[in-house]
Image (cartoon, rainbow, N blue to C red):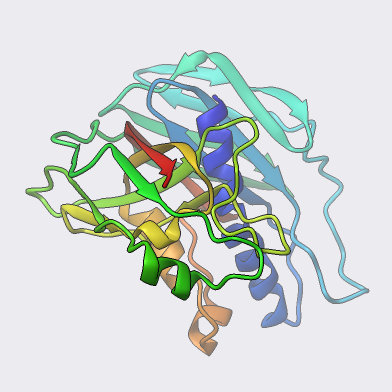
Length: 273
């Protein structure tokens, strides 16, 4: 559950932007819900529902409360009624996502049936890495990274490979797992992010540059097998007029995304040289 929540938090801004863009380009505001749900194989189903942000101060919202909706997910001939947790979050701990099954979301909002359907994905196979441990020099206060790495060169990029004969979409997420990790560059005035990711790819490999690491210690490398609808949402999040007018969504009578993913994990330990 923790991994799925972190993944959702990492990409929730895409859905927020989509909802805002929709309203900017539509003078007559229609209150439809914004959904974010990333079904992680092996974890309970979690759905988050929110309202759009209307930039028109005279916009009229529906009376529906996002915390008291009758939200259900159907799979394999069984319908599960999700439990509200507050904050627009709904969960059913008895519904553990299984790969290759189809899942359908349904609830009513503003007098309309909001629906979405997707299929859980298979687990990535053949995930391998070119290195499990690397050593990097710490950049001291007052020193530049270029001078430090000139004296102590960075190791080569770490290559990650996996099987992708059908050119499916994948995304790599890198997270430092230490409780209180030491920073690699002591000149950073802001606390660097402990989690970063690549872009969706249909390749079968990913090059991780050592410069991308911000901390020493153990890092979890998660390879997510994702559906095209999530990749489309990520790729279409631009600033063109077309994106402003037609934000990417796979929700009927709603905005956002209802998608599924499956993942495998490897680790890289970054040592202080």
